[in-house]
Image 1 (cartoon, rainbow, N blue to C red):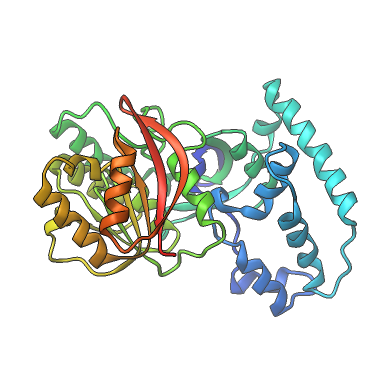
Image 2 (cartoon, helix red, strand yellow):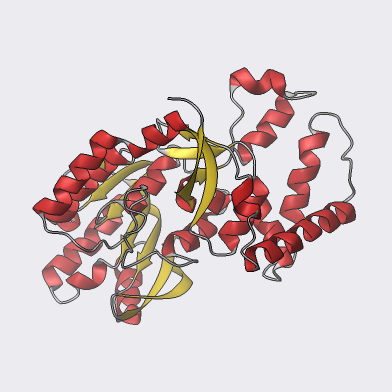
Length: 363
């Protein structure tokens, strides 16, 4: 098979480019300083491409300064001993004009974003796509709320992404458990039509969490996703190079998560354990506790065991989403764990409840 296809790809799977060792020779005036600068924003999700996000948020009046973008722009030249061809004001004027044109194209449903989509390369080992061009367009569309975008890939990459063998396993799980609903998205072309109960509309909970993490590298970070459901969050952190453990005691979710890991070519340590009673856990820098803790509020023994396990296992930060009583949950977590500071990230809602998303931190 040869040639290229234009395909819609979920925004979660679009990562920035990475110049490999073999491609260094193609960079004019290459220096090691340039490469160190490149690596700061290379091979990361568009969702966390802070330099470019700062530019468009500035144009959207959501951010006071585009300084992160201007710093990125200047350093791609200065690190190679080249004077930047444009001054700050000229860069902003050029990008502002481009931003306005993209806004018009988007609002008028013009063919601009379809005629010459960005080229991507499938990272088979990581289960995501690296953009080879179109970083500005992709960031713009992401901040406009698009959950997927048209890209160009080789036919071979498309077939690798389709993963026909893994697809049949997932279909079998759907049939075996008579599943008709999914709680979080499945990032595969055969399931993009299937609307999930959560995380469909920008900003999703994942968007908010990624915003909070900013440019912090997750490579090698130990993460635990407590009650990971079908693994959407765990797989995202794994794509970024984190060492992830996901706990899902409900058999139908565990079974589908296991098969989706194979389908989406992402692996994390998936355990069918209950968090409060598992003997297989270690210590983790980051914990995810999304719409889980409130299920245990009524059983004091389980609740206390849960809180003790949080103290034992999670060292740096705990991302949390409440049930319908956020203040009660927050008080219990602050009073009974080593976390002393809480930052509210967003008011959320889902499955009929008004919720709150935040992060617990050490002072």
